[in-house]
Each structure stands twice: as structure tokens, then as C-alpha cells.
Image (tube, rainbow, N blue to C red; front, side):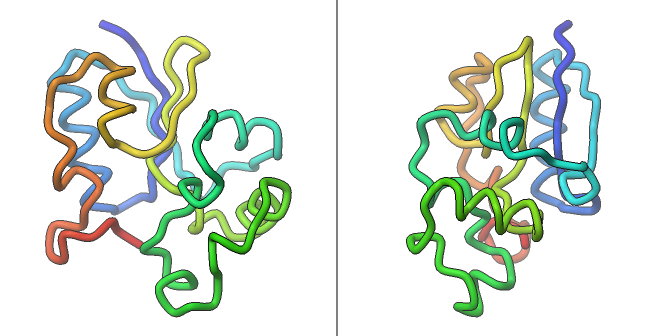
Length: 133
């Protein structure tokens, strides 16, 4: 069994389903709150890899849904700055496995984790089928 670090929003139903998929695939999870972690720029950025900056954001965060924050208006430095101040804007989960870091729970992440589950619905809130806030 491999141990991985899983950053979640506590109470998020989507993160709960993601954790269940990981555990059923043989992973042992160390779970931390993405909201309470004392993030530093370099560490946070390392989870995003070569993804476009717009994919770093949780597009269902209240400030994004209400139009107060436009992910397409940020460069990397600006995105990190606002995420350090408002971690609810960070796309989740953030996952670390053997010094490899990733964000989200899409095909790319599942491939990296060698999981064959379909990501459909795994980044979505159960009631709305959208990613959780």
C-alpha cells in the first residue's frame, strides 16, 4: 500500500468520494485541510505542474461563481498571491505521492495514480454535479 498526502476541504462530499476511490485502490491517506495549511508560494505552485493558471482555481468557489474573481485575469504570481490569502480558491484535492504533486481528480491525475475509475462526478458536488465550493 502506498501512502499519499490528500489536501481537502473538510466536509466536502466530493473529497469524501475521492478519498473512498483512493482507499479502495489501496492507498493509505494522510488527510489535511487545504484551508488551514500555512501555504508557501513554491510549495503550492508545485502541485499545479504545467497546467494553465486557470486550471489552478476551484471554479465553484463563491468568489468565482459570483464574478468577483476571474481566473483568466491572473498570471502565476497573481494567482498564487490570491490563493495564499483565500485558499478556498485553490482547486482540490491537492495530492502528493512520493514527491510527485498534482491537483484535481481528473483523467490526468487518475492516470498518474494508476486508477481506472472514471472521474465523472468525482470532482462534482453530489447534489449539483458541479465541483464543490
